[in-house]
Length: 228
Ligand code: MN
Image (cartoon, rainbow, N blue to C red; front, side):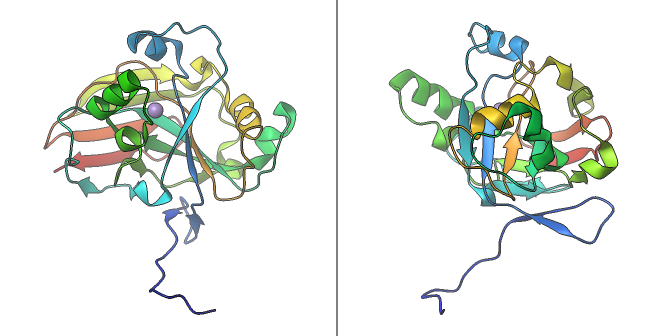
């Protein structure tokens, strides 16, 4: 087969302590998955069904990058999240089988053009341009679950210029990782290479040019991103 135009490389993420990389297929994100964040966004954190949006795979940014302040926004927000990478998938995955799909975990940022997202919410329009823009998904190297074990309780935090902005624990997720995988697999068929950004705790706020963001989940490599 011959491509009509030159084909591009698959997006990939380094695997920690390895010379291998993880190929990225799709990037799913969970909305409002910590009660305190749901409240700060003006929503009742009752256990409504989870909802999802996506970012393009090539929105992934490697650890240590300096990224330009995005175009078309004056309200860029940070959302620190644990990223779950899948080594297998399927449809209608049972909660008790969901952890078997996990390849590993990373520390991610769901960068958000909050002004565009807010406008989209108000007008009942899609979130894509608020969420799925270029370089909107920084992610640390992935740590295989064989090394970390299942992560269901770990501190997660984000510092901006050394000052803590977001802090919580994975045990505060409204929808746990296996519940999220199970629910999402009832909406789409999941597959190896898929990433799930598992939601952000409270404390989201604007970032500015020159800010240095450091994200952490216990047991994983810290994520460091600079906004140019
Ligand atoms: Mn998010």
